[in-house]
Image: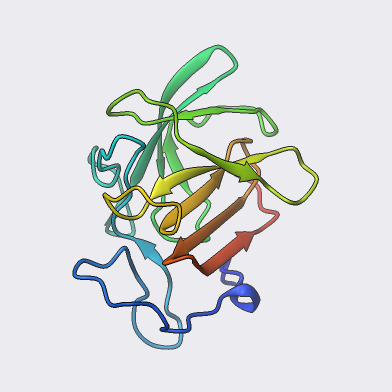
Length: 165
């Protein structure tokens, strides 16, 4: 069973072609979205900074502070894939401080998740321009599987699955 919310995924093709793609849609009817580049708030590349991979794709790495501890969390770059490695022994429901593991700067807050959970979205930028119009939005609550990919101000995907770690 796919964890991609296909019902809410729309790819229109109404955006300009980029010289370097932000993500890969794959081929065929079982295409998936793979984040191929992501940048922190100061422009640091967060893909492939450690030797962690998921299905052959380099991980997206973020810094996390939670419950008085901190570490690096390596996220699967495959959108809708809840796998992660590294600092992962965090109690579900814990609010986390998300930061760039390269610069140490906090990730930029985008806004509230609109599901009544009290969680907020934080930005992983898809281009070095650091525009909110090209961003992966991730939740700051551990185990709250909500994220969005927006490119050229167009919602490319939305994923909210009720899955366990």
